[in-house]
Image (cartoon, rainbow over all chains, first blue to last red):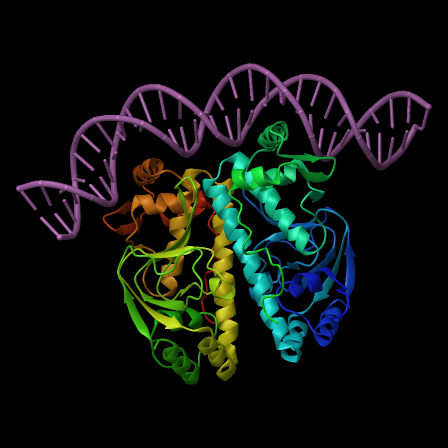
Length: 243
Length: 243
DNA sequence: CGCATTGTTGAAACGCGTCAACGAGTGTGG
DNA sequence: CCACACTCGTTGACGCGTTTCAACAATGCG
């Protein structure tokens, strides 16, 4: 097996052992590289006929706006994640996507993806697995907002983000670099920014973790996992499931 | 086009105009019919090697349990919906599934589904669309729990259920038969049963809708839609998108 | 007919939101 | 080099939506 070129290859490699040919096909999908600045939506709710992207570097959030002006962030995307894959199937996008940092992303049109699946069918299984994992994360997020209090919810969310980043080599058990503001975190957790601030202080003063200066640091990983009831069975892989 | 035999055929027919052959393949998927009583889980979180199902009649809920004993219902499934399709890809199911009523469901093994896709590729597109619609609903549910207050959330949820039921011929604009208890509704909405009761009373006294005696009745549909900020663009189809 | 489940209502407690003020960090232009 | 604006983080006081607890009525099932 050759070196893992891209975050996507690295992520999928955790599920399917990728051959040289499959890696080459994945690389081809990254041919039309584009750069977007932070803060400018690359896709907007209601918009039609947009492309999908594979995120190569930087962070992105997908969100929905409500008439009252409030916002719910559905998920953050990190390198190796697809952007707008689901919306491509509908006539119109059902959510908006905004880069949190400057990002690099590869434009992928539906036919190209289907071609890749025909050439290397195991890639289809891997992508389907990735999509299912994304859905599982949205479900876990839903459960957190519905039935966890602010402390558990915040801890769980930051732990999950860490596990995802670890899969693409951007985190360790110690922590990770995190460009999120407390406002963004609040919109993701369904809380107010003020309350997120208080919760983060609590977690810090309890010696569990810190969220400061663009970095998340886990000081008591086990304690956090217990507090958040964090179960990473669907994110954690010692090796490929399909060989 | 022949008569629509099953709720699934009816639902997919709203997206893809199905040929006689495609309808026949769909019918074949319904060959191994099984019946389950209400209240007994047909799939449990953590369980491995389970099959997927197509729901033919009755209602089902998929949920997650938290250590404190509380429960979050992720979604209700109605006739024509898939059960456990996502979990099949993981080693273990990431949620539990419980029939709310006595149900009839057809067992579907992964290979059978893939066979059907090979025989009639347009079915694959239709199923993918259905899966994406499911994900879109989970996302909308997430937004509701995160950023809508109890009244808006309840109204939105019951409106969406109505739209889904209409797709399979089990509802009109007037309302629909609904076997849900206020407790189930509470676990779905991330509220307490007591508060759900109060909210339902409010909606009733405002002349908007009733939720009584196993039936949902819309009295002021437009008022409800406005209150809930309900947008059914991803559920509403005047005719097939793919011909 | 009796018992469990579901629905209903009130009162009190609590978590989180809102409002408001201020400090720290950062980039911009004079 | 400083002044300014702007975003982000921080903290306190107060109010409101929702939960919890408790009791009882209505319904349905064996």
